Image 1 (cartoon, one colour):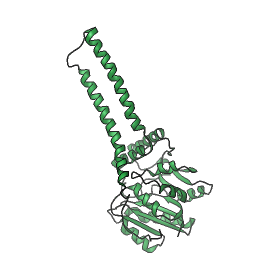
Image 2 (cartoon, rainbow, N blue to C red):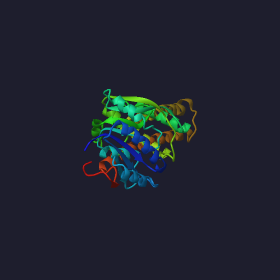
Image 3 (cartoon, rainbow, N blue to C red):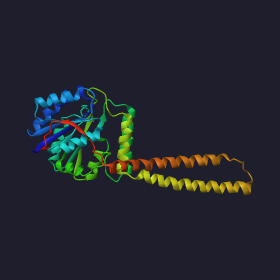
Image 4 (cartoon, rainbow, N blue to C red):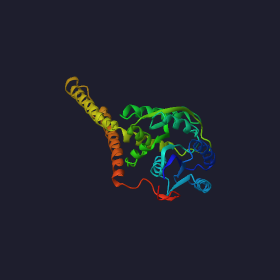
Length: 312
């Protein structure tokens, strides 16, 4: 049976945040609709997160959960929630309470103006290092310049959307998920609400710099072919430089007679060309690896345990 509102909450080692998060989300969602569900997706947590979620489920029939067999990643956890949710309107929020659950009410009110997607745009980001804020700013602006899709700046996955958007996302089976890009690509009427992001309530972020780099690569390779064009342009550039060096070598050898056997610039040219070749091969390899992952068609995730019935 379809609910009026679903809230998807990916969980990874958030035992200190689950209680306060549930209380705040439940209050907001309960005021909005009596027909709702809170869908927790446990992404291979190693702490007591799953135990706490199951305890909430025993007390509240609106609490649903999915427990992965291992850690599959934040975007995959959200995807599993989208696959399993039953709401006509679907909200996505992280468990660290950096994004205020109270904003869900404002976003849903905005949807009543005729929008299919309402996302939250950050004005300020509290409790984050200068490096993280700077790299995020550079990434989003670079991505906006190199893609043809209008991916909103300074936004995460915190948003609410209509059921029709979820139905579109289910037809995008790629392994390397970049949901905010996919939602932007889908189109429809989208708008935003600005807010100041709080610092994490408790615990440590699961988004290490390694995961952030991988996430950035998924976004770039999934929505832009500019890196491949760069490899082509670099090849033309190196060929041009090599041609000029060849002309200079001929001039030095036969006209000016000013040359030295074992010319150092020859070594530099070889190193330069080799570097460009390695970069180009690496870029092409990234795209090929993603094609290979999609061709294998392995399941995006494996569910070990869930309280969601067959009707979902």
